[in-house]
Length: 212
Ligand code: SAM
Image (cartoon, rainbow, N blue to C red; front, side, top):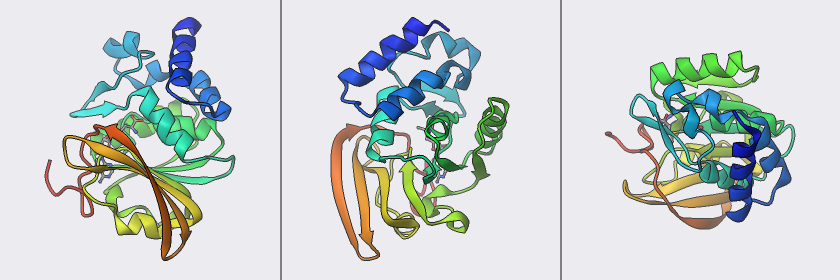
């Protein structure tokens, strides 16, 4: 894949407000075309969400970059991602030196992304299951990124954040969501910022939407 297509994408990310060099660097290193079905690979460096099969999508690069920048990832952070999808967001986090834990609800997608991440050399902990209740075994996390739209903020995800940890989650109805950036001050105090306006596939599960 040509370097110039990637460089054009990086310029778009900058134009869309991405200033964190470690995020931009991770986008330079990650091969997005390797996270897509081969028939879609030529579209990999367009700033657009794409279908990855199983009724799911790989998020738009700008959205991935906004979420990652908002999470203020530092090397060595423990990061939980809910919604592995293609594995691309997990790879971006791993490139930034995070210790990544990622959960996917669709079994076939979980197997596909687990195998892909391993083949590409990413050391990421993957799990098949309902991420709306988090992954308590490895909590607390310095950051949690939810890459599917939720009707509410799942309590277990707030509980599984470390003090000072950031939860990045799109919350709203099925048509549109606001990106909430929630910082845990302590177990009873949280600060919230929000960025409008996003459209994600639904977070399905116990603490998400109950049906597709
Ligand atoms: N982060 C992904 C990437 O980089 O390709 C894109 C994720 S896609 C927009 C949202 C994903 O969330 C879908 O793969 C969907 O199956 C998954 N999902 C929905 N509800 C879930 C849940 N409760 N637990 C885990 N994954 C869930």
